[in-house]
Image (cartoon, rainbow, N blue to C red; front, top):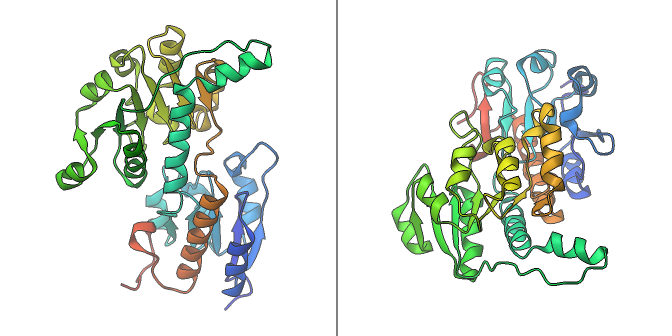
Length: 337
C-alpha cells in the first residue's frame, strides 16, 4: 500500500471536525483546500485542481467540473465523492471509462433544502425583504403580503426533497399540485397530492416550487411561455438548479409584473458567467429574495452530507460498494456485488 493510497483531499468549505475525525480513524490522510473568499471549488482552474489532487486517492468535491480531461490527469484518484446530490458537473461516462467511482451524498440535505424552500416561500409571500428595506429607510408603512395557508402550491419534482416540501406544506393546509416523472397514486392519496401537467400546474398555483434534476429535457422548463401561464399574483421558488429556469425570461416577467415575485437559491450564472449581469439584476429587484446556493448549508445538513461523503470515500478505498443510491458511476473492473 503506497503512502498516498488513502490521501483524501477536500475542496469544500465547512467540512467539520467529526467527518475529519472519521476519515482519520479510517487511516486516511485528510488535506483541506479552502477556496478564496467568495469563491468555491468550481472557480479553480484545471491546473489548480491537478496541483491539489495529483497525489489524492479520494476527492470530496462541491461544485467543481469533473471532466474527462481532469480525470485523465489524475491516475491515482479512485473516488470522487460529492457533498451534495446533483451531479450534472460530473462526466459519469469518463468516470466509468477511466476506472474510477463517483458518488453523491443522498439523503443528507433533504430536510435542510425543504426547510429553506419554505423559508423562501414565506419570505417572498409576506414581502419581508421589501418591508425591512423600507424600514431601514425610515418607512414603517405596512405592505400587505400573501398567506401560504390554504393556497395552491405547485411542486415540480417529487423526489426526496419535493416530498419533504409536501410534508411541510401539510401544516399550512395547502392544496398540492405535482408534476412528477413517476406517478405514485398511493403516495398521492396518502399525501393529498393531485398530479397535473405543467400547464395546469402553472395556471392554478399561487406558489410554484421547483425540485427537479437538471437534464437536457428539463433545461429551461420554466421559460417565457411557462411564466406567461402563471397568475400575476403567483410566486416562483427555485432551490434546485439554475438551468431549470430561463433567468433572462424570469427577469423580463418580473420587470413586466407578469408574476408577483420570485425566491431563488440558484442561478444560471453559476455555470454560465456571461449571465452574471442577469443574476445581479434579479437579486436587485425588491420582489426577489435571493440566497447564494445555500439551501443545503445548514450546520446540521452540512454535517450529514459531510459524513455521507466521507463514508463513501472510505468504502471505495476499502474496495467495497457504497450504497447503490449514492453511486453515480462505478468504473472498477470487478466491483464487489
